[in-house]
Length: 114
Length: 113
Image 1: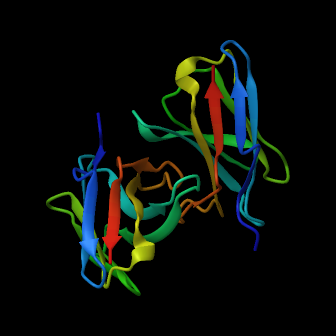
Image 2: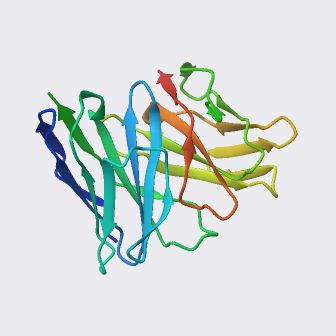
């Protein structure tokens, strides 16, 4: 099976712009979660989508949003970018069964905000 | 509030010896624990997990131990190999929220020849 894929791998934006990141989960996986990794805060949970609905949410401002399509692919959007949004954004997929905890991560999108 | 803590930012171990990575948690609602390994410029790779109903789980060279009363878990790698050099993260999740992983800050393991 192909793994989790994320596009683009690298992105440079300026403050105030918005950005959309894409994630394709492992075939058959219905849950997609997004995480932000920064040197200061480590790996932090953003949100999870399951069957096109947001099922869980972390403690991030409303500028961070996402959606999931009927084929389970997911996009994450960040509006009005700030310097502090520079990070590695990771997507993870799992079958979605609440009793199944192992998530499989993609390679990430490195976002740099100038 | 760091609910999952890895107090050792780095660890150096000789090839062939045992590597022991430690993790402490504070949230008593956590009932499932995972270890991930991460290389630079890659996403974390799942290694091994343990449910709170167990105190030990083995998979090849990797063993995870859970001490619920101490809210402590550890990952043992025996024998350590140079390819094990990476950053190791422990993560935890509460019952019924399988996808919402809370990660520790990571421990960088270096396995030397």
